[in-house]
Image (cartoon, rainbow, N blue to C red; front, side, top):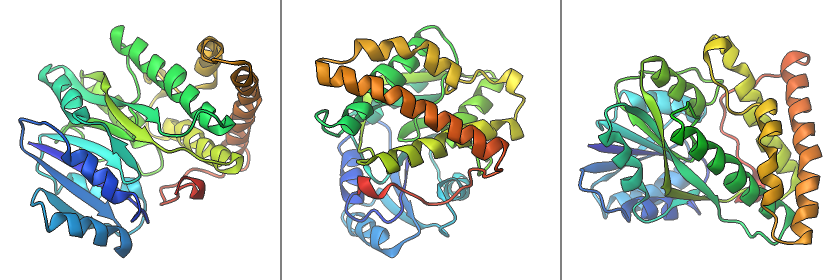
Length: 296
């Protein structure tokens, strides 16, 4: 039994497409789709789909954030495998099959799908999204998976065995700490490059910096709950620096070369800003529903 959980917040324009993507899957296993959202507009769209298909269910969360909603749902869903995603994405046909197939290996506890940008590569921010997805996250996860190393999952599309991890903290990334919990229990983390999820990224620099800053701050707070000596961190300034050579192999023309060089000082600024907020200003990441307006 597979339980697909789609967490969403004020996404009535995109939730329908997200649901349709998960319906367009060739799965031999039984599965259910649970759409969780705090707002009536998103849930009304989801309920219109639920009337036509019994595998779709809705859940109105209290609006305290994505991770709070997930903690509530973990005790309610029936699936042996939980597949988690968002309401503003679109999964490619049969992506869930490729993701779930990894669990045929009893040693796999968590598995991540591959994130692909749906934005145009002809703009600077669109190009950045493709570079960070392809030369960055995809290549890093693929390399670590082939070597049998720990990797963090992508919150846009990932899965794990139910009833192994009961809950997790609300102020750190669930797609980072849950795989760590599985690793500590002796499981491996899988990566399914054919399990593709299309994601729209921020369209202006302010939203780009804000999104990356929140992610970076959340990762720096992991030390509150785990011994960092035991945690093989993947999203670090050091790792980004040493693996940055892939970025220079990615451009296809002179304009993209320029955009690649511009990205580095922006990323350095984000790391510096995040470090200042956490270490000095004590402005910590908290669980709350917040999405970049430019992606809507």
